[in-house]
Amino acid sequence: MEFKEAIKLALQSLWANKLRSVLTLLGVVIGVASVIAVVTLVNGANTYVTTKFSSYGADVFTVSKMPQIITSSEDYQRFRKRKDILLPDFQYIKDNCGHCVGIGAMQSTTAKVVRGTQSVTDTRVRGYTSQMLLLQNLNIEQGRGFTDIDEEHASHVAIIGTDIQDHLFEGVNPIGQELRVDGMPYTVIGVSEKQGSTFGQSQDNWVGVPLSAYQKTYGTAKTLTVYIKAGAAGAALDNAADEVRVLVRSRRHDAPGSPDSFELDTNNTLVGFFSTITNSFGAVAGGIALISLVVGGIVIMNIMLVSVTERTREIGIRKALGARPRDIMIQFLIESGTMALVGGAFGVLGGIIVAQLITIVAGFPSTVALWSVLLGLFMATSTGIFFGVYPARKAAQLDPIVALRAD
Image (cartoon, rainbow, N blue to C red; front, side, top):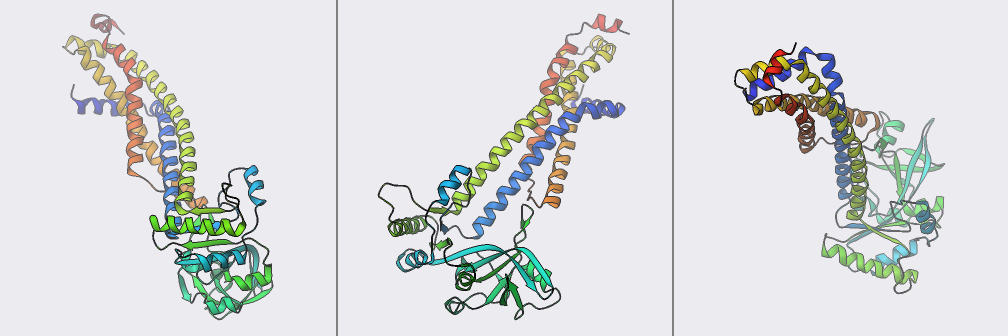
């Protein structure tokens, strides 16, 4: 029997027994859909985070009291006992770092923003030094950014995200308009370009004000996050990071040989950590999907055994006409593989649809990778062939005379 003819017979068998085919392939469909959905979401998350952190620049690193990612409550309690990084610490680094080509500091809190009778809650208020917009690659779409004069005089000026513009300044040019942040008046001087959302949370619901004005409202006894630009990745970044580490350790009187009493994070550190987390999640989800594929394979094997019993007389006729056991075995393997491949194709489609629905509903990023589609189809086909070996061998070993006598 030719390969094309075997595939045609397998498809005809699937179509002739639609309900049985659906139930047979359900396990394969679920397994492949799970793999595709998980890989698509993990790949999308990794791509998004890599792009987001890389947008700060590969040569930018941060110094902070606590790491940006904390994995346990014990670590949190230990980190919060550290001394705060305050404005004099930032100024000390700025004055003494020879390898730093840019340096800025930031504080933030959550506040209510009001204009007239309209308001926005849970808005992130950021206190910025003049270089912070550049260090965070925040482009100004309208107006201007902060200047050293704004910082020096603690000017009550503000840069807003697009969510603030949409909610408080709909149909109005916000530049030159006034808004109130926790009751304090600020004049809008700039609007940042739209950042979008991260995992369903908008990145545009924020107001930036000069750090000096921020500290007049919220106080100076809160820790800063210091952003430092090295000028280039690689050796220049390492040299700048080493110099800053020495400066901060000496400033905080860390004993020789003792751990840092602060956190120095690079983009690669954060991206690598996030990739480890998502890959671990993907491995667990992949194991669950593998169980679904095994269940689907067992169902395919059972259905193929039923098919062998139903077609015993057909097998006997083929053997009587000269078909070799090898030909019979290949025919049934092709049929089981084709059956699983069809289930895999529906699984791939279902997985992509599920991932896109999650992206639409929850804002979780997703990216369809060609290799994941090919992997899903390969896993499905391999499952069908593997679990089809026993029924195929059983069909191949049938005695033609006994088979011809079958009802």
